[in-house]
Length: 152
Image 1 (cartoon, rainbow, N blue to C red):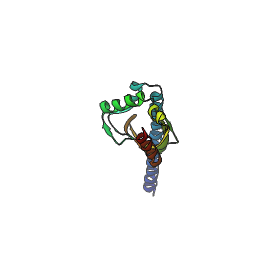
Image 2 (image 1 turned 180 degrees about the vertical axis):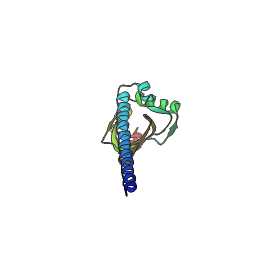
Image 3 (image 1 turned 135 degrees about the horizontal axis):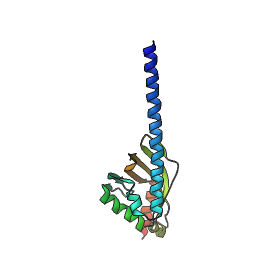
Image 4 (image 1 turned 90 degrees about the vertical axis):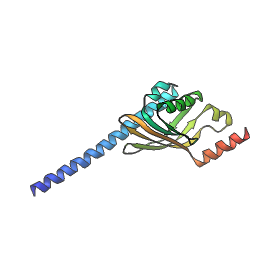
């Protein structure tokens, strides 16, 4: 009976420990993503890059898949050139993955009369770095952007 009790306590401790680990990763991920948004708003490409893993994978809102720091750096430079700014709604943590909706503002979209656009985003944070980052337009925003581009 004592052995069974110890086993139950050990299982409970592991379960609670894993739950706290998942919570800590989510909290750490939140701070990393907020730092990314702040660095992007400050137009600090080096600070944004420092948050990405060397082998990070990025799915862009235009459907491109970028792999590694060289490709990610070009994407970030484009965001900075277009004066991109992001506002995130509350993020939902699922282990080391965070999921959220938000709005993205850009100068070129402002000129088309469609900024901000609604997006869904998700990211995976491992060892304090962004290893995966994805942005997808809402169907309404995609339609609005495509219609504005066709006009011009």
